[in-house]
Length: 283
Ligand SMILES: N[C@@H](CCC[C@H](N)C(=O)O)C(=O)O
Image 1 (tube, helix red, strand yellow):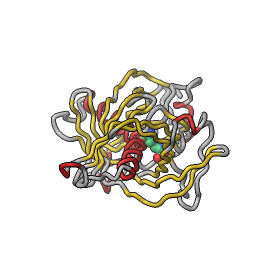
Image 2: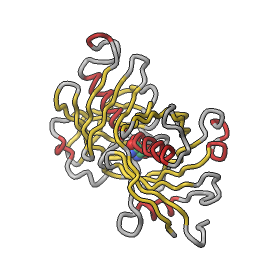
Image 3: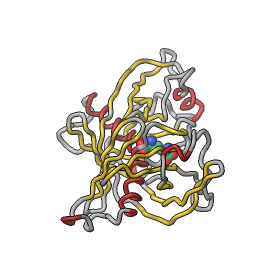
Image 4: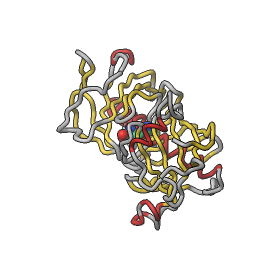
């Protein structure tokens, strides 16, 4: 359903996790957003380039069951065209776009509907915080790259993550292929984070994202990594000195994020997100 004159897009990123935004408010521009089109848009040589696509659509059109709680729905697709339940950096960029375009009021929390329910975003100047709700901390299983393997904590942030605490971020090698994982634990695939401690409440990570490959950042992955690291450090909200929220700095190849695990058992993801280009495409 490509329009003869092309259709609008924007390009942006959160800590270099980059996305193509497709405004399609009433769903009439794209109809079914096919995987072939998503792959064409995300292609870094023949397309615009991105780790994923964020279609900006009214919740009443995409998922009427959530329309009473959020005007806008983030229709997220990985660069291979597969949908995911959630995207932490994507939803922060999505909110930036809504505010920039006057579609949401930056002075109030912005509710955004997703396949994992409604998330609340707050905008404070250049910093955008997404409340990703409660993490589900599940069991451990092995992940492997080549002849190396590690135990990994299963943390569900709405989408699945396997978090391996490693000695060195180089241990995982070039990460050209998805790490091997247990398909019984992750029947729909998994995002895999490799995490090292950098200091007190300070970690660094690399990530191989389901459907997108190794990326420069992953917001839900940073949250999963923080939760796994905090538990390994013997910390969770309420157990911290003073009994309050627990905050970690999470360094990713594309920048720095802050993840806060609150005493209400919510995980808050904070960092920058910027729109860098806009135009019209025929892809
Ligand atoms: N980069 C995202 C996560 C995108 C979805 C993920 N690849 C999946 O398939 O679950 C983030 O910032 O959270």
